[in-house]
Amino acid sequence: MASADGDLLKGPPFEPVYQSSRGPSAYSPLHTFELPKGAERHYQQQYADMYFLRLAQLRSSVKQRAEDAWKDFELGGEKAKMVDRVLDVRQGELCWIVGTVFIEMGLKPNILDDISKEHWIAAPPPREKYLSPSGQDEMMLEDESGRLRITGEALASHYVTGCVLAALGTEQADGSFQVIATQYADLPRQPQRWERDDSALAVSGQKVKQKREKAGKVAIVSGLEITGTLDEDIALDLLIEYLTGELGGSPDQEKAREITRLIIAGNSMSHSSPILSREDFAAQKAGKKHYGYDASNYNSSPSERFDSLLSDILASLPVTLLPGSSDPANVALPQQPLHPALFPQSRQYANPPVESNESREGLDSVTNPWEGDIDGWRVLGTGGQTIHDLLKYVEDVEALTVMEMMLRWRCIAPTAPDTLWCYPFQDDDPLLVKDCPHIYFAGNQTKFGASVIQGPADQQVLLISVPKFSESKMVVLLDMESLAVETVQIGIVRPGPKE
Image 1: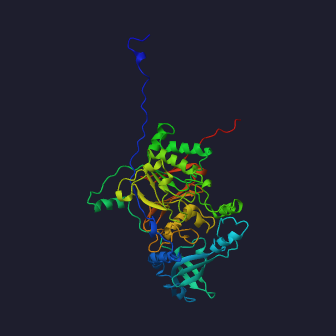
Image 2: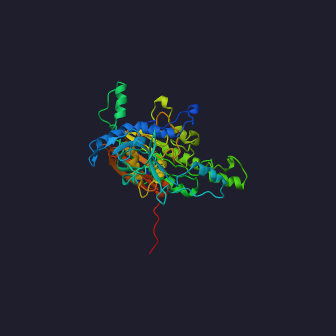
Image 3: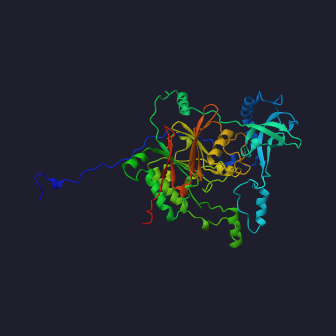
């Protein structure tokens, strides 16, 4: 029987549903690493010209650093002087020279070895290190005039092929140059926060903003390595729920609401390329006697699963997508954006052409490496290939140390094109660091790491080593206001054995 006040006709107590709204993300990508289109992109150039181009562009900066350091340097009453060409060095003279490092390493890949592999029964495994166990690797300094062999403790574990440096020392009786000190370009000028945005407003005649809204957080993930199999669905589904604010209670959702952009730093798909490796092609050729590309072997599951993941995330969160070594993109650096045809579901969120000047708040498929401004900070990021290749030149060095030295050398891929495939640039090398970034991240590393380095003009750079999600189940969160870094572990906690 209903009561007099009609309580039985009332519905259950109303609880407001939590609505997750995100703040804006000031996002302005640069197109530093985009290659010419169509017939304008060609490969007739000599790769050696790249190293001479880098030397020409960095020589003045390295020379200035060396002059500041050694202008009053004396040894045994002899004052050091600069020699313009490495082949003009005279025995016994205290001098310093500027050139590009080249290391002759016995275990380094060789094109003649690659050709001879076709006649082997089984190719040797890929090298984990290029360093010779016997220590017979030779380091040389070269410029337009020639090469000079350099030795000395000052060179130990500090430089790799492609670095431009100044070396102070004397030539020995055997023709080698004994180095006692070195200098490199160090960090270039660092733009102020919001400098690019304020300059654009000033040029257009608009009033420069005096106060901006508080920035949110950027999530960085790499190495999803999606195969399209069911065993990886749980971790990926939890990642989607976390990023879209559907995981956990109100405190967790409130924390996820602070994320204003997701950066996916390479290796999103695994086994997704229809192009076989040399070894796989040789095995197929010997076994099936099938030549060329076999369309029946192509597996579309990784791209389909990744497309579904992107479409779920893009409904509430903009994404910047970098390709990686395992993704279906060009192998040589800089890798160009993944083609939108790979993402039939999520490409509806893709950004319009650059000429339209519209907001890029959807899916922005970019190059690897990539550079842009996020919330006023200059951000530089890679998929990790440059770090992995350089680590083969050195022993017992962490990824963060390698990243720091790349910035101080002002080149994010010094080993390209020697041991890392890259486009043969002629007039300008975008792999040189023209402006010092505020944030530099590298994806697909073995473990997480973060540190802040300082430059000679009080530059400060935050370095972030982003681990593979497929192994670590880790997402890196970067507060774009304080530049504080934290990590979030995505996964299922399994109960331990009962006692």
